[in-house]
Every structure is written in C-alpha cells, then in structure tokens.
Figure 1 (cartoon, rainbow, N blue to C red):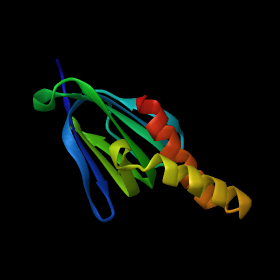
Figure 2: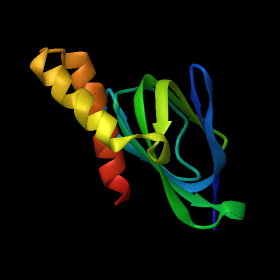
Figure 3: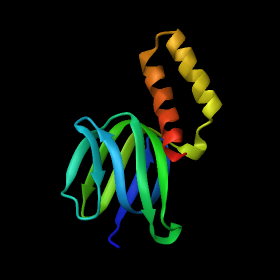
Figure 4: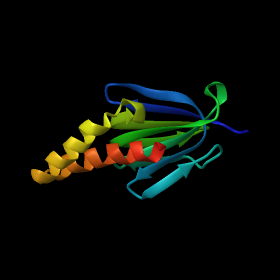
Length: 127
C-alpha cells in the first residue's frame, strides 16, 4: 500500500508524526483529501477536524485532531500540517469543551465558540 509521511505540528509542539494512506483537512477552498501521489499543494488551514488514516508501524487506524488555523503543504509524499493550535482527540476534555461552548455562546464570543465547536466535532468524529 502506498503511504505518505505526515507531520502535524502546532506552534508549540509536534502533535503527531507517522505514515498514512489518507488525510482529510479543511482549507480556505473547502475540504481536501490528500493521498500518496497527490499533486503538490500549499493551502491555508481553516478551523476544523483533521482526519488521518494511519498505516505503517502503528497499524491501520484513525487519528483525529482539532486544528485551528495554519497551513497545509504537500510535495514528494510529505504532508505538513502547520497549525496555530492542534489537539488530538484524546487530549480534549469533552466536559470542559462543552462548558467553553456554552460560555462562549452566552458571551457572544464567536472565536471561542468556533474553537469549542471544532474540539467537540473532532471528538465526535472518532466515536
């Protein structure tokens, strides 16, 4: 099976690195799926879940992260997701995200509301 190497990096840390057969992310042009052999690309990441179909040593599986802004770059079967903020779903405290969403709605804070919503959508995508 053909693979691509994926690096998901946030401003403060490397979030995930490994081999994958497919990565789906939201860009300013819409959702995009990247598979091995994809045409080179450079795009702007929008807030949303990123889904990585893993292969290789870690086995076949799925990694999902909540990503908030950044860039996506692909060339020579190397995919880089450079995010302002990125959290793997197992790092997300669902109850805390739900409280943050309610608080953001009551305070009419659109940015905080979107961030909390993305975190909850990422967790829901795994279930």
